[in-house]
Image (tube, rainbow, N blue to C red; front, top):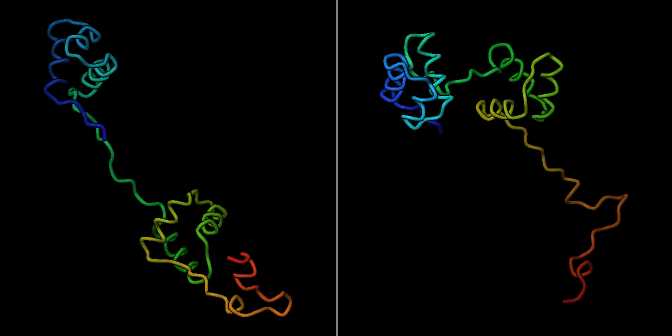
Amino acid sequence: MVRAYSMDLRERVVAAVIDEGMSARGAAARFGISQSSAIKWLKRYRQTGTAAPGQIGGHKPRLLTGDLRDWLLERSKSDFTLRGLVAELAERGVKVDYVQVWRFAHAEGLSFKKKRSSRRTTEAADRPAARAVEEVSGPA
């Protein structure tokens, strides 16, 4: 992950430009940083009075809360697929993607397991009976 430069370096670059009259590009070369960093630090210093870095990262609030959460919990009592829920939310005017719905379902402990069909284990009247493995693969 990216880390911000130290405040000491930032202050020295700003001091070189403001106190010594050096250009931002010259200060960048002197301290071994990129020109764009020096220019951005000076711009921030002039706007806010400090060259301190802004916030990196942070918490992004969940979209599926409140009424949407209640609706999703009620909706998930019957059969559902995640892609189906994404489509239903889109019809309601909520723009979410598959991953957001998956995270919601995972956090709420929701899942829909298909029931095993009893027809699979029995022979169907309209299909021929399954052949033995030896018949399919041939003699060994």
